[in-house]
Length: 362
Image (tube, rainbow, N blue to C red):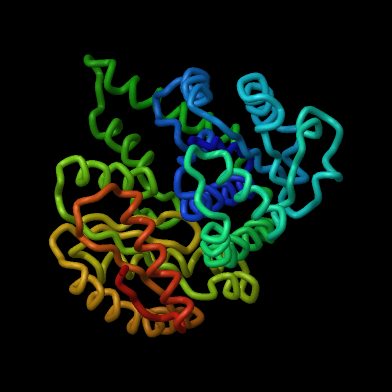
């Protein structure tokens, strides 16, 4: 069963990304489609959206107080309503109850709040809707395991950056237009054979696959590399590395200083894990790594050494001390999403056991 998750704006997007991961862990027989994020560069989003709606059974619309009038969000909500019916379109209100939604298209749907009770209600309903639902007690067990992390991530997203930073945060429309300009520029370079500047075309392509803050590979580049390895039946390991208590750094030192620390950590990771196949910033303070030449036990050793040295790197550069926790998947030949799930669970286990360590997935 496919669940469509719609968002508009950076806060809504961050919650949507974490919610999608959470739902895949807890309701095991669903797939998620994340609105514009899962539309590849060059695709016509209207056609792609129409195709995905044909496969969608339920839709979740991440709603903040600020994005309720977003044309993009209301367009998708209207299209979803026509395709699915109002009962299967669910506004997921972030930080406020559905009763306080402004009058408009979104207020016509029955919403739920992003607290524990509301999210459990959402999970329970989705589980009941799949063709072979799991026993509710098992679903609740998984929910209780993953809910604290989702709650933490949503709280960080809703806290947001300071006002000075908020003014510079691009809207979803601005991001889409920027992507469109990049693609058009690339096509223009490649299409004009008489005056083609291949180096400029390569630069455009690389920008689409780079995280703008750290200059590491981004989620799209990581996913493409992992998918290619899986398609070739190549054994590889995924490691997820997440900074510990990073929100406290942002709260105490400010988001600008936090971004500078992320840049430093990315540089250290890139240098210390140079034997990795790819190192990517997945978002926030999470970094994902692929090794295709090391067994999982050797990856654990490498990450353990890195984690032990990380506080010193930060302090020597004049930053607050920081630690990290990591989870490592097996090198079995299996779909990427299973490796990500196992690495994520192992990383979360490392945090539960005291943080500042690397754990191997069971």
